[in-house]
Length: 551
Image 1 (cartoon, rainbow, N blue to C red):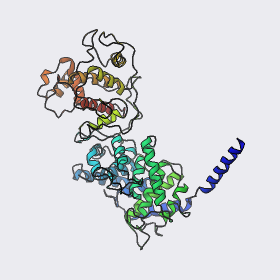
Image 2 (cartoon, helix red, strand yellow; image 1 turned 90 degrees about the vertical axis):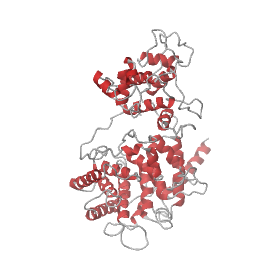
Image 3 (cartoon, helix red, strand yellow; image 1 turned 180 degrees about the vertical axis):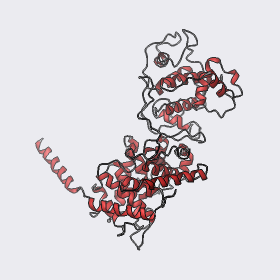
Image 4 (cartoon, helix red, strand yellow; image 1 turned 120 degrees about the vertical axis):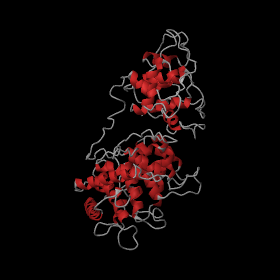
């Protein structure tokens, strides 16, 4: 036994000697950041809404700690306000990474991107289809922006597919190339080709987006493959060829990979990413000019403004990592310079019942073959990933089928994380049935009532007005204010053609559901006695959990 232990110790020591840690010259790094910050302040005197001379300059400066006058950031904020007012709140109709970039810059500078000249810049990030249209960088930067300060994804009423973080993560994972990397177009038309190759730039960006989800097994596996890919393609100078400049090494490739390592918490001196003694910081600095500017490539002279701005935030990412500070894109430590709507301090609302709890993701990426083009897809997948709702089979959800009262009671109690209860007063809910405990819980917490004092009708099809009442009661448990006056109820429901057919006992609940956007108020009729569909139930509960800060 001792001999075996000794052998393992020798092997461990040999492995340690074979994988040395490389130090970064902190003095040189700090000096470079100061020079480049000064250069950018001198060349970008009036930052614009633009990837060059705008957002990346703001992000690098704001996260560097360099002494920048508050007036500089306030000037940029005023420019963003003016830009939005002139364009009716639209930054771009197709290139939605513009929203992500501006969200990041405003957050870094201490401003709230959810209210700029009255516009919520996070709203377009709720449109999954428009975000992914641009390429893999769409979902990548949507996640980076949203996670910079843990912004919730707003419900986007105009979206064909409501975005969720799970959808964005799944899209990024789907588009990983066979070699472990990512590129801009792989998987855009469907399946990723067997001959597709990753590039360092997009691989670095994808890893930055996935960095906060390493607790998910599929994300961790994809990350490990990507890191192996990056280590393999890194050249002897510590940089990369074939990325942004295609066929020639460029500073931007080093920036993206360096930022990814820092976001992942991987030491800059990790031997996997040091070649011939050169770290990524060494490679990045090899593009620097004496005045603090940076070249795009090693060949030739001069400077490149975009390269300089990206080099700054890459150096800042390294500086923050070495100093044990929040990473570049973890912006909870920013100094707030404007009015900032408070973000939820934790899961749930202050007035929620003590037994209400958040359901964690237990089955990431769960989906069904029959919801791929369904309008309720995002809601179904979000609930299914948390075990709140399940399919009719392992692969089929049947979103357009009806739902029973027992099924709704079971899903509603699971959505709120409520514990099962042993018994209910209902004689038609036998203890031997699968739904006995959840129906008992729904009754105990006053989410449901019977069709009489002793009957529940568990297998009866649930109607839209019944579902609204149960949803409103669940919302009240979650801490939402569900009360509506007679006038408010009348004003909310009167615009529907059939509002007079709504049962009196259901009217306040329906008014609540419509006013809080749990139900879609764009429809002409309420259809109170129509059977509600499984996809619609998922949508209601998803929106309820979102509004109650339980997602």
